[in-house]
Length: 425
Image (cartoon, rainbow, N blue to C red):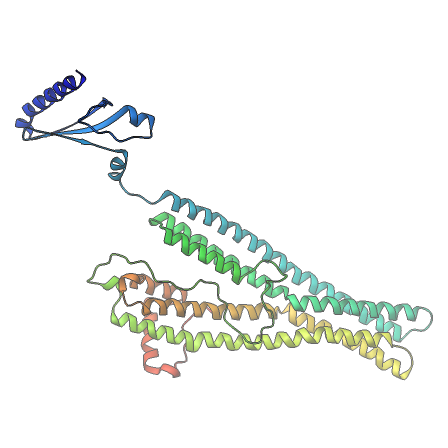
């Protein structure tokens, strides 16, 4: 009985719809009816209580033909407009928050280690000059107070020697420069993530690249001092590396007429720029880094050695001929140690070395970026040529025309080119 009532109801809808089809051609209607168990209609098992109660049908009347189509929830969702994956956006926001936290951490620790350098420099110089003064007074005095002055001077020299050994090992000025570089690079990554979230449709590849960059920066600029601190006196100068390995880009839909902004002339110009970066800029900063490293090694060894010699001289200072020479050794050694300490840490030679090393790393990063794009034979996998050329020009402090003129000059003079690629530093 129920089947007959449902069939008569559907037939009445079909007859009514056919009357309108002669006027308008096509009419769509949606009918929601309670679930009916019949032998003619097979209904899937739905998990939702609401979906078990109601089943959605789409009735299409065209040319007096009645067609029924069951619309499932999955089919309904497939017709919705595809947008960015919410999970990807959440992951990028999580990485962005972690990067912002690292920016603050490296900034605070950089300021702290810069204060270390200033405070330790002032303290050690004060101790050293006070010990030299006591040694001079002890050499020109007599009586019971001489022994106390000699002992005090010797102890202060020994304390200065130990402090100099520690400060020369950790190089606070170099540690501060490392944290400043890390702050700048993490801030740059933070800005890139913001740009990706603002103007693009982020994907899982963006999440992977952001994670790789965070881990690479953590490895390049560690926060702890013990165990993972960067080598302050390496056997050779190597450029700083803070970026992950270059990977192939995802294929993009591009216009075949402009080859994703690339052409043969632009490729040749980029090759010339890459050659100038390797021959001139990177080699120059590695050479300067080697000089700064040698000077820093000499000063780091000279300071504790001079205070140690001064401690021995002050211990044997007296009125005797040999004692006067010992006193002179104690006084002059202390003064020279203060001068060496001031040049090393007041002049921040360790910071200068780290700056040269970081600059050489920047030019290596530019070299690898250009090389990875040129090595990719499929232009749709490259970064857009016009955008990439603009980025290179901005990072080197040049205009687009100036960058092209440099490439033209390099192709003519090659090894004899006196100009550097970068105008920033």
